[in-house]
Image: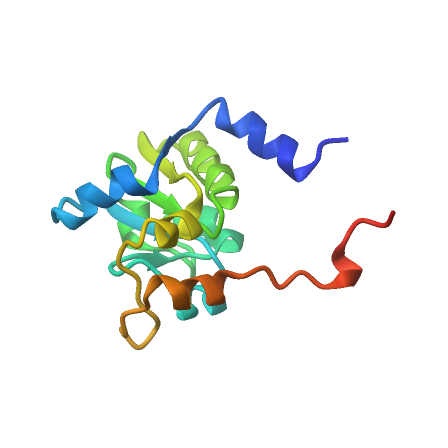
Length: 154
């Protein structure tokens, strides 16, 4: 049986990652590819990279194709476009980038360490209202909310 971490490790063999501080330099220079945030809408509303587009992981495949209610034209028509996939920690984005490559996207990478790494590098972030979120507030919003019953039994 494969675990979540096993699936991520297998996908990492096939996809490229970019470090937040390396990509951050490019972002701050204004050279910005399509930023695809695959977190859930509630996560995206709390904290995001300005200019990013939210397509939850659960509808990603349909969003990448024409003729679906979830179709996102920038994705459906953008298989040659440069895309940086973003999630909270960099694991969901690895899996999403892997699927997108299988679907024919040729310039897709995952943001290593996700929005948490972006926050640690103190790069620009905002909330749904467009208000700037500083790194300390970002730390609070990104803190784990793991409940005791979600922990592996001993």
